[in-house]
Amino acid sequence: MRPLRCPLPGGLYEICTRVTGNALLIRPSSEVNDLILGVIGRAQEQNDVELHAFVFLSNHYHFLVSVPSGAVLSSFMQFVNGNIARKLNIINERDGAVWERRFRSIPVSADESSQVWRLRYLLAHGTKENLVGRIEDWPGASSLPWLRDGKAIRGKWQSLTELYHARRRKGYVEKPGDFVTVYELKLTVLPCWKAMPEAAWRSLVRNIIAELQAEANERCEVTGVRPLGVAAVLATDPFYRVLRSKHGRAPSVLALDRQVRKSMRLRLVELEQRWRAAAAEATALLAQHGLGSALTPPMVWAGLQV
Image 1 (cartoon, rainbow, N blue to C red):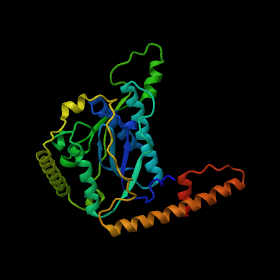
Image 2 (image 1 turned 60 degrees about the vertical axis):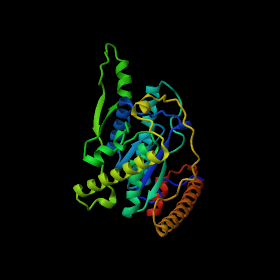
Image 3 (image 1 turned 90 degrees about the vertical axis):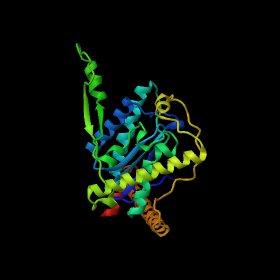
Image 4 (image 1 turned 180 degrees about the horizontal axis):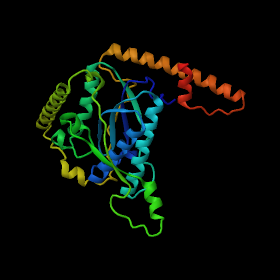
């Protein structure tokens, strides 16, 4: 049985989506980065989502987001994954699914140590996977420039629908930039740092980056394995499939403290039981009135909140 989407509304979540077959379809390039950032900017305009950090590798990506409800999270992710997939297929001249499965969302504990732990995880991706020697060298879409220095992150959204209709008009001459909107991403500080002055938490971010860099340098010295390098990353065939290492089952919650993890899991179990009971009751009620059995998660959550 699939886990519920956003079972703890209003909290911080780590989102992960992987490319089908572990191919490198989101290999960085200026074109790919622009479309990814443009889609995220457009999605933010339509959904009330706080984006705290993100990183796109060639075969998967991560978000740290805060959302008010499961419905908002689903709408945001549907827009992001659907539009990135369509536009990537155009760039890569292919058809078919881009994402391996539905996105995975895992609640993160509210304590500072857990939230910083997950931020460190995202920031370390380029060096952790031994793709680049320095954290700032990763050429893919990432929140690093804003987190470290407050630099604006922008992307380009092109309306394929408007472009399609324009091409059907007699006399239309297509020009670069037609139906393109530039979006600046709206990023917010981690919830645990909201009361902290901006200069203070940016200093913490820079310290984290320095620590991660030192760890990466030490790892290279010990193993003797050199990073792949930026040029090699950019030159990789997007249809190449990486041999995936074995991973255990994804955790249901993310918290460093054992007791906090236990408490969060118990709350998840309780909410899931209530949700499924409410869904079964509402479905039976609909069937009694001949209205069919179609029921959406927002309808069930609304019933639980009454």
